[in-house]
Image 1 (cartoon, rainbow, N blue to C red):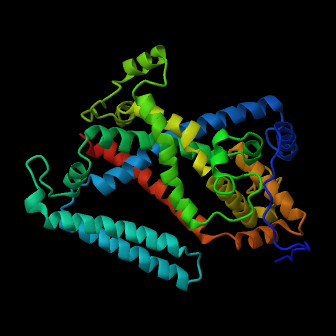
Image 2 (cartoon, rainbow, N blue to C red):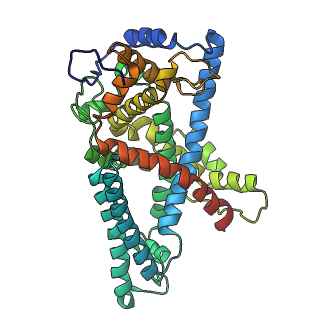
Image 3 (cartoon, rainbow, N blue to C red):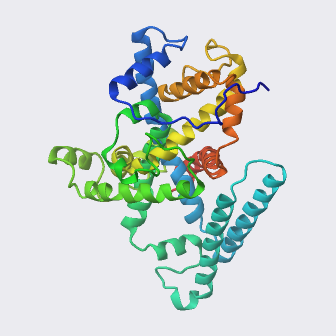
Length: 400
């Protein structure tokens, strides 16, 4: 491995504040290094297509990943004793896997391990306690025999349960997924959201923050996303934030205050997929809007930090093959990557060149990252692609 030639301590790049003219000039300078789609019209067309793909992908991932998680954890009709055993077994497996990774010298976030294990174990213990109290608590409406009964008994308001704890999070997560994959750190440093001042010096400070995002920030971020996005969702659900024309149009498209039942008697899977989307479309749209305008703000710092990590990781893996590799060779840049991610890759590669060798520099920088950032977010990325097919199965095959 090459040795870094810089005489400075291993630095974290300062995220200095930029005005919009500076950001635009810097973006043009960096993107000029791409060897594909050099013509302006072609480049703009590809960028528009990528934006549309990111929005569509966010919608699919948000819809089916949240459904997969929701139905697997809460709606599988598992007897409470079995559910308790499954939860406690999973919590034990999480701890054992953490120890296994640590013994092999792999990155391990003990905060993440014990937080997840404690969360799963608490759910199992709660199910066991309710099972033991069942003779006093069960009714004909809530027999409390399965985890589904337990969920419906815990949150008895069907509107809250189905609209605000399922449909809205689907849109919210889909919107955040799109924000993450379309993230452009240069644009964000030159165009500040007015609410970021609430987090000055903490999660959202992209101008001068010089410390790593840690595990407690990562786990607190989803809570803050809901806190910031929910007021908008409630007002929009009641029609307060929309004009009468827009509200009437969406109301005509799908009944506003209730979901349509899925028509799973259809044999065509494409028709079932369409039903699974239109059945909750109003709240899904509101969730998407919540992520776009308010919910994403507490996640700015985490998203920016993780994009930087992913860029360094790719430079470390493919840096020897050259930044400006042809699109048909396995170089650092690919034509289908979002423009924001391409900018991060070029920027990190160039910064590494100034310090002797891009790959050696990226490896050294990667070693400084807090596992509390890397482990939970990489775990989330993996789970997404597991939960999406699970959610499709529940909505298109199981749901009636």
